Structures are given as structure tokens and as C-alpha cells.
Image 1 (cartoon, helix red, strand yellow):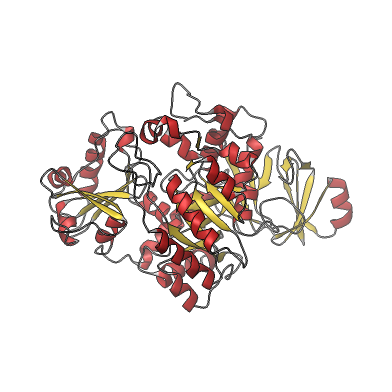
Image 2: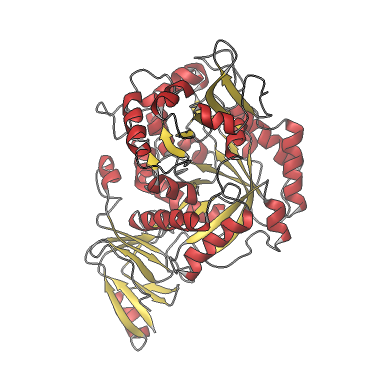
Length: 541
């Protein structure tokens, strides 16, 4: 038995503006597209459910190509500082939150961003000590490549004036050489290593919160990297299985595997694309540099607003080469975080030295600061660029002063990448940015920040069409995960994953894209979200 979908505007995304009148699905698969009459005549005896779209717009299910699902859930269930527009408002939120802490409990916050403040001075440990003297405190910066810890947290991690910078990390210090609480990139691990163990209940609570919000935003799946941060590979993997499979919070999770736990994955008998329709394993994740906010993204030149640094290389070229070789030994593609142009160049060097010969394709994540010769080199490799268009809205205009205007010709250059024939996928990097895919599409199309009253447009020539931007979150994400033959389009034989919108995203004013409301989220033929009931449903087939 099956379902007939009709009564709205159905975009297949096979080609620009390609539409069909109706879709027939059986169980979790799309069986055929066509007119209502033809499908009724052919499948009339099988159709036991008719879904009238009531004039809404139906698209293939949206997939976020890069985020941290548990991390996003954490942001939803604990202290969120991302909307604080001053240091004072951060302090007020911390004090209120601390009032409900139990004895010996750590205070952990997320998302502070000094670039939103009138005076962009980061938080230091002495300020936290004055606010919360009796609890260890760590506050993760929005980029998650830096955090600030108070004195109790530093003491727990045995960080003092004699502690050396770890490889790939920086312990910032005051004028007397004492740590000021700011830890960047790999230096953060010193504190993470002494955090209380995360419970299974906490992981499941975070996953439930993240998936529930994903439904509301029209997301049917994600590519996520979580397995190295919450007590180990097996514990985290089991939390995914419990929530998605056993609790039937249906969601398609493509798991990138951090290089530090890839041995555990291999030992468990997993391999590229092993798993099932809900949870599967993807590429080996590697960080090659940090982020622009903390000046740890690795540039080929000094930062314009701080010539004393050009960023941080998490690994030497030889170490990065060795990690890529390890992935190849395990028959895995790689997914390399590379924000700065030198980090991107090092990633290309490693991939070129040890090219992928098995299944899948490599991905370079972020690809924000580039040079023309790097784009040309990328075209000769079997890879995809995993971009986060929302970064444009968050980073401009301050990024121009940080990187230097002379180096901005191929930065956030989404249109250039597509015109050069480089496949791209679209993600949010939540919890770094909001999970909402329409914010990313809006930024890609308008090249503006919705919170900017002046609506300043940055590099209009790099703006994408709405079709190109939607493709990032549909066909692009499917291609990145080697699912271009069963996901990302409304097509015979593809999965019955649909995102149904109240408005036609291709017809409305681009400035209003960010405000689009999701009517329903369909995963494997099941209505997992309906805006009218605000609840998940049982399968309709």
C-alpha cells in the first residue's frame, strides 16, 4: 500500500524549476512521479493514503552537511551565551545560571562572541573568579576553537605559569606570564580531560533536543562529528542508536569519525558507509587549523589586525600526511577542517600525496580563505567542499580587517567555486551557528546579515541563486555522503524524505527566505513534524 502526494508545488531538484504534479510513495521509497490522473490510474488499488499539500511547497528532505548534533543539543539544554551582545550581559547570565548549581558542579557555557560587543575584549579568568568563586567554570567561544576557564578549572587541569603550550594549542598569558584563562585549540583538551564524565542520560537528552529542533527546521538528516568528545566512541555511538533506532526518533545520521577514535571504529568492525539507513559511518575527520575568531585559522600571511601571528597548524605537514595515509590504510576518505588558506594548502598536499582509491570522496570543510591556485588544484581531485554560508553573515565586516582586504579576493567565494565546477555541500556547523538551513540559504543568496539594519551586501558577485543555495542542502549533502543515487532529489527509487514549506522558496523575496516556515518534515515516509500539531506522527504507510 502507498501514499499519493499532491495538491501543491513539488520541486524535484533534478533540474532548476523541474516540477511534477504528484508523487507516489510506498513505505520509505519514491515509486513514481507524474500527474495525479496517471498515478491514480496506475496505483489506485494501492493508494490507501492521500496527502493533500494544500498549496504548500514540497522539496527533497534537507540535510545539514556539517554540524555537531550532540553539541547542538548541549547548546539547547545548558547555558547559551550566543545572544549576549555585551560582556555585561554574559556576566548577568552566568550569575543567574550559577544560582541553581549543585555543590561541586561545573558551570559550562556556550557561544560567547566578543565580536558582537561594543568593546571586543575577550573574557578572562579573573572576571569569572569574581562572578563564580566556588565552581569550576568553562565558557566555550562560539567557534569552539577557544574557551575561557576560571582559576578553579585551570587548577583542576594543572595549568599554571609553568605549563607549556601543547602541540597545536595556545595557553594565553597575562603580562606576568601567568595563564589568563584563555585556551585555544588543542590547549582546550587540558581542561576537557578533567571534566566530569558525561552520563548516557545526558547524551540522550542532548540528542533528543537536537533532533526535535532539526525536525522543526525541515531537516531529515545530518552529517555530524561527535564520537570523540563524550567519553569515547562506543558510549557515544550507543546513544545515537538508542535515540534514533530504539526510541524511533527517526533521523539520518552520517557520522564523521574523528581520527582519535577511528581505531575503535575499525576494531568494532565498521567501515565507510557501514551501518544502516539511519546511522552510518563516513569519512575520517581531521582538524588542520583553528578558527578566525581566535586568530587560530592558519593563513599564509600574518593577520592584518595582529601581525604577530598567522594562526595555528594543528599538525605539521608530515603529521597531516601520516593521518591521511592512515585513512587510506582503513579505506576511508577524509574530511579535513581547513579555514585558512595555508591549512587548505596543507590538506591538498596530503590528499595529493595519498590519493583516495576506494569508495567515497574526500571533503574539505569550510574552505573560507582561499587563493586562486588552490581552487585550480582542487579541481583535479575527487573531493567536495563542505561550506557554511551562514559564516558570511557572522564574520563580515570584521573579517576584512582581520584577514586584510588585499587577501579577500577568493574568500567566502561560493559562486566562484560552483562556476569552477567544484561540487559543494551546505551545512551550519551548529552549534557554532544556528541550525536553521534557511539562514544559510539567505546568506548565500543575499550576501547579507539579517541582523544588519543597513543590509550591507558583501561581494555581490559571489551570491548564489536560490536554486544553487537549496542544492547545497539537498543534492550537495547527498553527494558528500555518497548518496547521490538515493537522496537529495525527488526521483524514482529515492528515499521518501521531504521538506514541506508554507511558501514557495523560489518565488518569495530573497530577503524573506530566513523567515520561511516549515509545514512538515517527512522522513522515510513518516511525518516526523507537523507545524499544526507540533508533534511527531507514526508512519503514514
